[in-house]
Image (cartoon, rainbow, N blue to C red):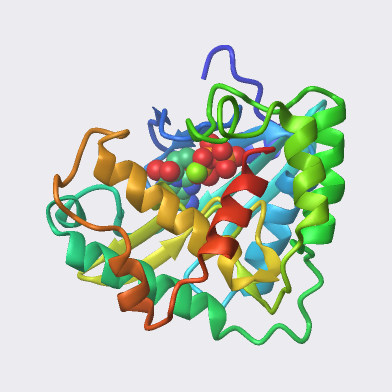
Length: 262
Ligand SMILES: Nc1ncnc2c1ncn2[C@@H]1O[C@H](COP(=O)(O)OP(=O)(O)OP(=O)(O)O)[C@@H](O)[C@H]1O
Ligand SMILES: [Mg+2]
C-alpha cells in the first residue's frame, strides 16, 4: 500500500491483496479487498452521511456494513463489507435490457417502501439548491460532464443562469427515500434481484423523481453507448412501464438539470 496513507486501526483490519477500482467519477479512491472495500475521500458532508446512512439502513435494505469509519488529516476512510452480485451495468444485464429495467424498477420500489418517519438526512430541493449556490459560486461545476443540450445554443448560457432557473421553477415534492445517485454502477444485483445499493453519500429524503431522473439518464447513456454500447434499439421509456407510472417529463428534466451543478 505504498503511497496510500491508511489509519493504523484500519490497516490492522486488512488481510488480503487489493485492486484499485476505476469505475467512479469522483475524487474518491476505492480499494477492493477480498471481502471488504476501503473508500477514501475528502472529508465532507457526503463522506460522513455515507457511513451514517449505512448504519441507519442496517437490516432495512441491502447496503454495505460499516466495518470502520475514520478521519485523518483531510481524508475520510470508510471500510465496508463488499456487497454480493454485480453492478447492473455488467454481467447478464448488459445483454438483457428487459431484465435490467425490471431490476432497476425493483430497486426504486425497495427504496420507496422505507418508512421515512425517523429519517434526518435531507436531500430535498431546498437543500440541494443551497449546495448548488456554493458549487456555482466557487466555480466547482464540472462542465466536462454535462448533457450536451444543457448549455450553449438552445440551452442555458452558464451555471448561474441554470441555477436561477432551478430556483424559479421548483416542482412540488413528495418525499421518499432517495438514493441520490441512482446510476447503474451504484446498483448491484444477483440472480435477477437487487443485492446491494452503494455510494450512499447523497441518500436522504427527496422526491421520487430525484432517482427516477438519474436512473433514466443512466439507462439512456448506457443505451447510447456512452459506456461501451449495450443495445441499439431499446427505448429507455420502458422504465416507466416497469415502474407502472406515467412519466412526468418536467420533473425528469428538472432533476437532471439540478444534477448538472454537482
Ligand atoms: N461496498 C462495495 N461492494 C462492492 N463494490 C463496491 C463497494 N463500494 C464500491 N464498490 C465498487 O467501486 C465503485 C466506486 O465506488 P463508489 O460508487 O462508492 O465511488 P464513486 O462512484 O467514486 O463515488 P462518488 O459518488 O463519490 O463519485 C463502484 O461502482 C463499485 O464497482
Ligand atoms: Mg459510484
